Image (cartoon, rainbow, N blue to C red; front, side, top):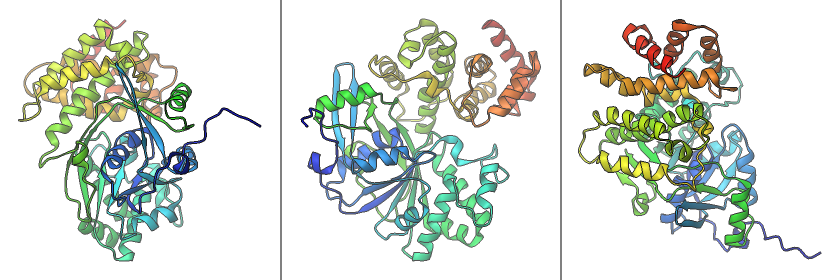
Length: 454
């Protein structure tokens, strides 16, 4: 029977060779990883020494789709002037994250030199003190005798134990999540879990695992069936797992790679001695603006970043927040003015449908990184922090109206919202910063900002 349907994208139909070996193990197989770390690796690993074995987090679906395509997928770089299509072949294995046997075997292999991570901020399971939340239900479940770990640190500790037992030496763990000092966060999460499971293993990890700090940046909205149809038309192959992203990309890294790494700098990555200023610039200006647009924009009826930034009220709120944050971004090399201008251009890309509902998830984890530091810095300078407090107020107002709150702390948020008046404001603020919730001046400011939204 004749059919005009294109063949499925795989290595045979595309004529792509398979990298000779796995050199990188990745945890958290999602769109961002594929548009970022896999994209960078594909551009520089011409010798096939750094193939990626990627493991999913919660759902095995992404691994199923990629496995059927031999790991191949298309990155669609969507700019105002049109689309560019690039088939990426750096992922050579895709697995369900629950496949601990394969994860352990790969991490223990002498050819593996790097483990990269893109999960979520909440998946590190850190408490307010920056240490592993040892009393959390997820951690306690991983600690049960004979339990198969389901958390990121639990699975990685399990795999690192296999590497220790294999005697193959040091390795680098590279967090690519939106956390300040994400390398230190990964260390606290992984070493903290190891200390609870096996203190001797924790000592080995401390001595043999380098936790690299990074700042990553590339907007990657969810792909749609229409995107798959466009890819099929462009490359003549059916891709069930395309990734849509913007032309812009950035990767700043700081740390040691004791077992080697790809030459990511050849694709534009930057290696620095002190990453903290770059982290703050990205977390406050990009991610903070995203959260502000998500909450203010949603309450004003918008659904995408482009829609929201096109609203003068939303853009003015962003500029005010940026003014506060910029006052505390003074390190050499940051070029904050140009960075802000570039962000407005990126937000104004009408062809990138970055949905506010996606950005709005896990606000209780994101705001302590994106809003609270700016507010605290403003208060320390004797200023009100009105714009950064406005981001917190926007979150509270959004949560009060939301039909569904996608947040790891949804029960606490719902309990706080069941209160009324000042008690509600205090309870919501305590979720993101318990100390500030005891500051009457800050609570008064939030009350006034919330009153202005009604």
